[in-house]
Structures are given as C-alpha cells and as structure tokens.
Image (cartoon, rainbow, N blue to C red; front, side, top):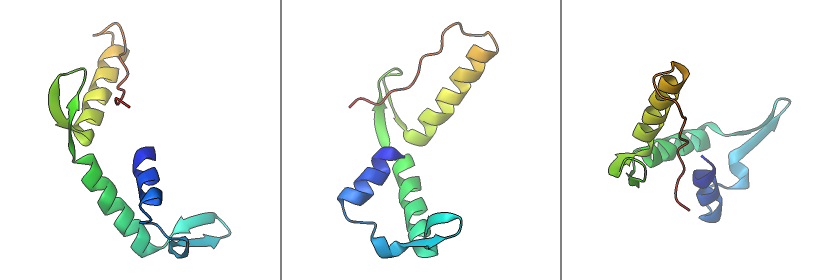
Length: 88
C-alpha cells in the first residue's frame, strides 16, 4: 500500500480537494476512494517475479501464499517463517 500511495502523490493523482475533514478525521471523497480502490486492485493484479518461488505471480497471489505459509508455521508443519520482501 505504501508504494502505491507514494506513487499517487508523486504523480499528482490525488489532490487536496479530494479529501474531506469531519469530526472523525480526514477521508477521501467517495469519488476519490472509488478511484483509489480501483487503482489499488489493479496494482494487486500486476505480475512480478517472486524471488523466493522463482516464478511470475501477482501481488494478490503472493499475499495468499504468505498467509498459507504463516498458517503452516503456526500449525507446526514448517519450522521457520520466511517473510516476503520486495526487492528494492
């Protein structure tokens, strides 16, 4: 999420007028939130080379793989948890 948000800011795809402030804090307008979520979903479907698995996958699939790996460690089926890290 952090990389996506930073790219929105750097590319001027989010403008100050697309935020609303109320007693609960600051939020996107409905239109800006819809655009943000659509873009984020698209980002999650982008393919990349998974370093540990040495295969092409999507960010969404890599999250699923990581959750399954964590579950196997918690159940004692695997000994060591290997965190997923993107190459910088």
